[in-house]
Length: 360
Ligand code: NQM
Image (cartoon, rainbow, N blue to C red):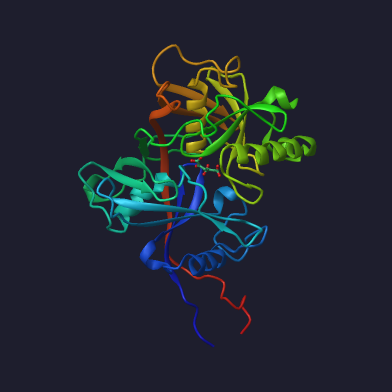
């Protein structure tokens, strides 16, 4: 009998998600070999992920792979991998702005970046999209301090703030080139501010947009219609056949109920997000600001300033967002900033299910 082979791994909550963080050097270099190993680390495919680290939901079945960056504009590279729960699939086709919140602290913990005084800013290249971000967090005494009094909706208790900033994006905010498109007979706005997202007025689908996520997931007529819209929008957005991919996401919009700018329910894309993703929120915020988008007549934009409040099932996300409305080839995101928190849960060695499935 041979002993199990372990891997160095840190489990962290990043924003409202949870994932396994690895140094790229601790994983196989070849993507197919790495992904097969990560399935065994997370316990997929299995609806309960009972034999691995995964938490039986897309938001707790995530992996961040971090390495020193060769890009002079970044300290570290961050590759996000979505590990499917009940399918043997690992995808690099989407980003994750929530796990992003843990990347800076992880880089300091692993010695990739030196803590710089009472707080540290880490410059991050998001490998999935080529976008950049900065993350600033407290590092008194040269160590990451996760404790603080910042609360974010969807996470009990408080922790230290991780301030995330996104510089102007090179990509177009409107991937179809249109402010509105018709997808499977429904008028939508397709937006990409780091996460391809289809904005849909909830009213157009005969729902209020205030429903409980579980009720929306159970509504078969609604989910069938959303599936059609997503397939059509995927083609319009240049993403090809999106049947088996996790992007684009779909966000239902309805008027705000608690003084914010808009109420949202986001399909990611099968499950309904218990809150909203960071880049998902960035897309909604930008979409709200685009003249003529489907958000008009639904959203209540603040009179001034970049900050707006996106309401979602577990509370709200405040996000700062500004756009350049009229370059020649359509609006672009100027700047986006959001506050998250992150926490180291465990640091150690993970033992993946053996390749034999445990048979000797
Ligand atoms: O949009 C969920 C999450 C996300 C992604 C998803 C995210 C983002 O909440 O930036 O963070 O849309 O699959 O982790």
